[in-house]
Image (cartoon, rainbow over all chains, first blue to last red; front, side, top):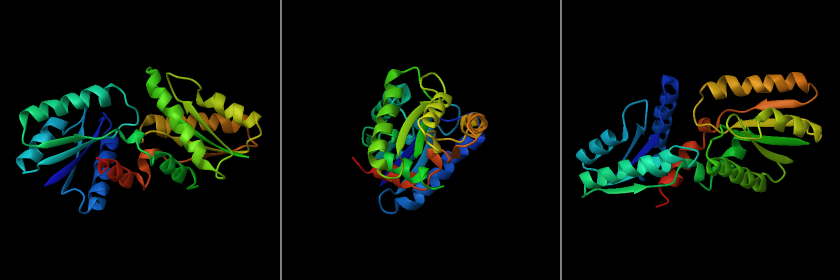
Length: 121
Length: 121
């Protein structure tokens, strides 16, 4: 069983965190057979945090977890903080496979998404 | 002549700002006939700022400018700060058409972009 975690920064604004929850629900609906489970987590300022979501998924029997940083830039959160949390999870759950993919801002499809948005008016 | 401005938050990290420059170059290459010009701007911490890019484009003869917030959440920057800068530009350049599109995090294609990124490993 595999899972995808969308890890966002987290905000003091409830509305911003709710946008992540809603986005995760849309990804879940579109994931079809690609991921058994799709969850969200926050790095700071909001719950659930990444370690508790990772623990929960492993307890549920997930053996492959993909972690996707929902960040536009490759700053310290993406390059250091999230990898450090993943390293801790690997030590804690050695039988689970953890994959960290690049931050959303680096994806090849981003320019086309921008152009789609820019042309919607 | 029309133009697209990708407005990002801006960072103290040169590398993060450079990612926006590189993304803008990719959008420019893919824009083909949709936009005559594609530029980037930063809201804080880096240059060029939005008002100076807007002024420059109007001086170059652009009569329709689309402003796209490169932000994942609809926080104060997206809901208040960028619209305020646009309002000021409308007063300063009444003959130019300014369009503000939603922030990138709100686009319908975002869930699919996430799934493409999540499945690349």
